[in-house]
Amino acid sequence: MRPFQLVLLASASIILVACVSAPSLEKGMEALSSGEYGVAVRNLRPIAEQGNLDAQLGLAEAYEEIFDHRSSLQWYTKAAEQGDARACYRVGNAYALGLGTNRDGAIAMDWWRRAGEKGNLEAQLALAATYYKGELVAPNPAEAAKWYLRAAASGDANAQYIVGSLYANGMDLPRDPVQAYVWLSRSAEQYNHERTRMLRDQIKATLNEAQLSEAERALASSK
Image (cartoon, rainbow, N blue to C red; front, side):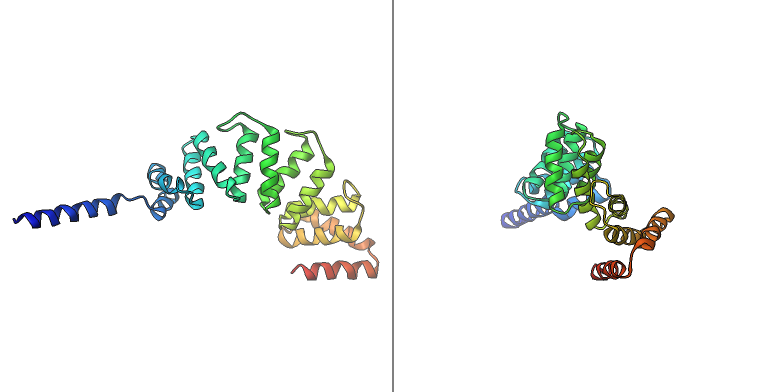
């Protein structure tokens, strides 16, 4: 074989090896989906280090799956710093549970709040439940009601039921039978639970014609 042919063959081999071994976002995400977490980490880490948000999220999830919570938190934090709502929620979880870091309720609530304000439903529900139960922070029924209302507006059926109940009873939200009927109706549309239907119908029976018309307009405008 001639020397220049050997050079071409060697070059082709190098190119082939490079193509096979080059990190790939697509390859990393496929490996993540199939449970090949080591392959996912090898492919995603170099791309995540370049600031790619999808790679950072995938890498954080891969580390989470293999219980490397410290590395998972590191990459969720990088993604959260880019403004990703889900990553903000996951960072909050890590501080709430002490996964990969010391448990810190104030930091957890801060990250959940950032996620909730970006519309992340899981964070909204976490904030509402935490303020209601007084876990991590002192109980704050008004803040709990605020975040249940945000979660209800995001479409969570259980939060809609809670908000409807609060409006019905005047607990932590001003008593408002129209709003109670609206939120209970929205909840019942998603989750046909007997308790929800019964309370909705009880409230409906107390509404006058003008109030019922107002409620029906509100329901129609949200569809």
